[in-house]
Amino acid sequence: MAEFPSKVSTRTSSPAQGAGASVSALRPDLGFVRSSLGALMLLQLLMIFNVGATVLYITAFITCSAAVELTSLKGTRPYNQRAAASFFSCLVMIAYGVSAFFSFQAWRGVGSNAATSQMAGGYA
Image 1 (cartoon, rainbow, N blue to C red):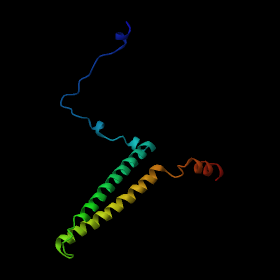
Image 2: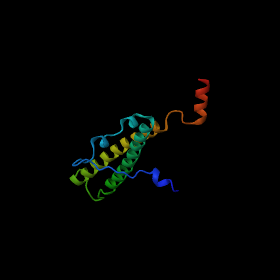
Image 3: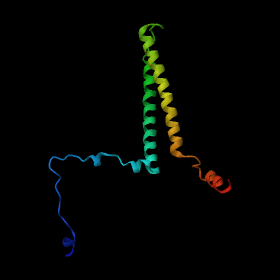
Image 4: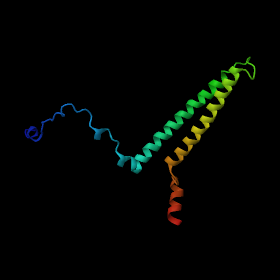
């Protein structure tokens, strides 16, 4: 333990005067994004976003559909507004759900089953 302090350098440097965050520190690492691990991470983030958006639009659809007053007449302005909002949220919910499904399929990859990947790789 007597040698430990002599091996450690405690010299520090001070940042340049007036310099904030450097531009190179704010640039994304494009090499990582282009790697397979980076691509999978971005796909997983997209999948999580799409699933979250799907859940939110499901609640919007249910809320808009349930908020139509039972006593309102068809063809009146409040009824038409609720019906249009419900229809739009249903369309967007379906779009996000399909996008989440395809994101999951891309994330999982083709031939992720061990038995099928062994058969396809060995006897194709």
